[in-house]
Length: 252
View 1 (tube, rainbow, N blue to C red):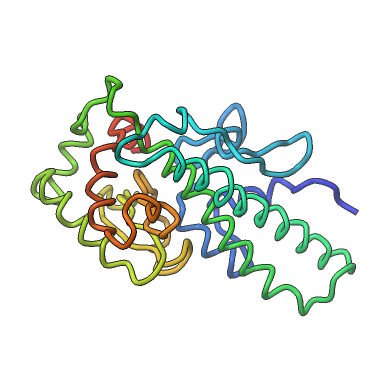
View 2 (cartoon, one colour):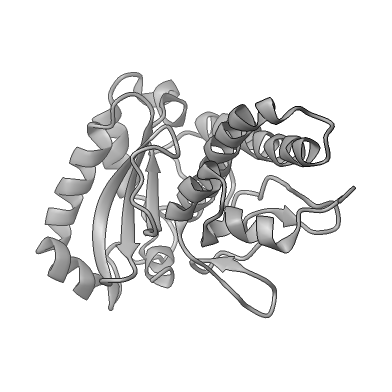
């Protein structure tokens, strides 16, 4: 019986695409590429995604800043609950789905369990990856990160949206109009090299296959409800003031 996630299955989750429908849905998170340390997804290494090769599972990556660092835009209690409870649950669910599918393969679970496990894999895997982009795509207001994109990202924004203000308007409209829970994402379509704003409902629905997320704004209520209640638009505006444009540019 295999005790580790094999390279093929790991690459399938990381975005190369796969035979199973759920893994194919995960491919929209970006193309995996090889490096000296293993596959990466748009510049995020397995370690940054929390892959623990010794124990063959994902672990919750630590926040890149203290829980209070995003205040007053996002309060420390929201950050702690969001990261330590909600994000952690997606990591746990991802590991459980991987383990469950292994049990299906070796006969410890019936084949009829496959459909629900594949859904769990897509939901939790996409949720985990997008949360890594979410946390790393924000930076404390007091640091020295630029408050506008560096080139060539700024040139690409001007080309594809007309201006940074126009991008902000479209992004906010996308975030505020997600039905129920989901995400607004600034993404790069790698074939044309063009930027686009996409929505995701839940974590994995309404995807555009193959795009690479540069920034991701979580509009599930757990991301903002303690401070903003039903004022999602106020949260989105505050989030846009935290964007780490250096991080976004590094993912091009």
